[in-house]
Image (tube, rainbow, N blue to C red; front, side, top):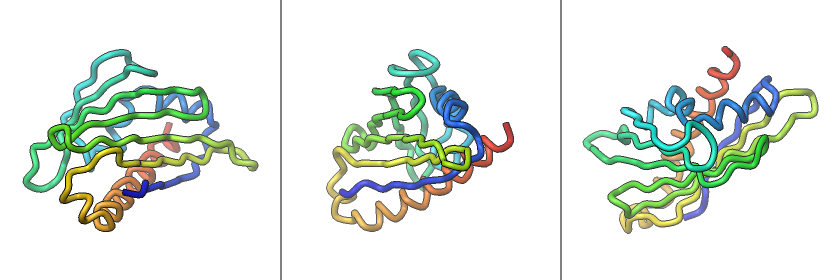
Length: 148
């Protein structure tokens, strides 16, 4: 499946945005429309930080595990996740670019490394759903950062 990318611009400088996103616990408030009941393990920030959460979809008890696998301060954070009982593997990449007038452009790309057969067959619907959900997460992230 093709990746999905969403972006948002915030007035905060890149280092501040990176420092916020680097702490995996900070992701819960802007993604709790998709994932709830977060449990954290490993380091608080950086490579090795891990979270498990319940996917918030109707009729699902699916658990997702998210792990930070790469960190390039203050530019990029890469996470990989496993869900659907190990049948779905994704990679999420936050890329932070300084804006010429100040502030930061935050881009989040979600790529499927593996997906259950039914999701591959419904790829356009799955991509549209994730674009909408991740777009909402980015708008919520922008609000959190503006209120800091």
